[in-house]
Length: 379
Image (cartoon, rainbow, N blue to C red; front, side, top):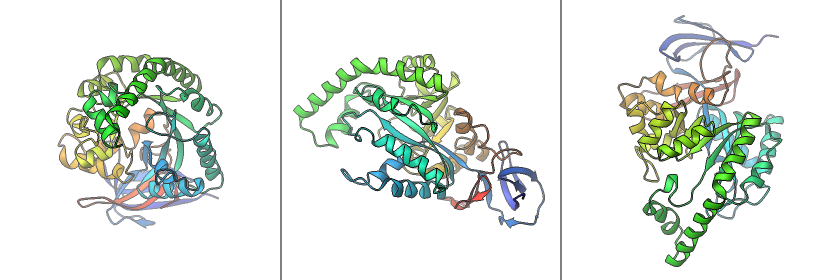
């Protein structure tokens, strides 16, 4: 039996224009787009109809599973709470970050992240999830056990993205000791002696492990068709290194020089949507709005605030005369989808998945009024 419905009286955000009209959905796919001023079906009352958002990097699941230091919540409950907040923010495809490698910043016990992946698969099998979930492995290459954690996912088909990270002092995100001291010493209350020992351990680990782990992980990713992301690139040398590893996504570059070089090399440059909403980076690095101003911002990620992913594009369209609403929304829909090879979603076009979001926004924070994944209403 064919299942179909019509969405009418909508401002439809296409790749290059906003069109007033109607969309026909049939069997979970977009069947037709018309300019009809009225149509039988659901009247959107002039609200926006946009593609479902595609989120490539969120640590949000982690905060549901470990809501307080030392506390572990029921995994299935944590997944469902995370999924509900993600979907109600308009995100229909999400790459959940799981950390690989225990560093001095803390971490989870061996096997916990694999248990989370298994729980995510169980949740999908039992039809508990509203959004479509994939896995993004955040690989701390300077950690001695990152390969053990990474190799535990050798049979997990949901893994579609892996990022290569090194949070040692003097590297990437923490090029200056001022930043590093604030993040690791001041916030954690370490004494001068404790901090000095901590820094030395991290430097030694990075020197021993970082390069060989980057090579090993990237080789596996290429063999399995897993997209690779760089993380916190700061210099042209970092970008050249990323090109050598076949990186497709440059996450959170910390300098304009690195962002521009990554963009020009064909990588999608990703920054945090909270950075756009706040107008600055929480760690004191470059502002995402500056990258947008220079035309080198390609993808946004909600990172740690799910609703920021739908809020930030409207801010960009409001504040940058050279960025239209379709261009801004492409940063959270079509571009992230293409970057990781998901060509069946991210746009409103005949034949693609009916992953759709109804949004009302006159000014301020947008309101998500309905979410459909493959034509099925989920929020």
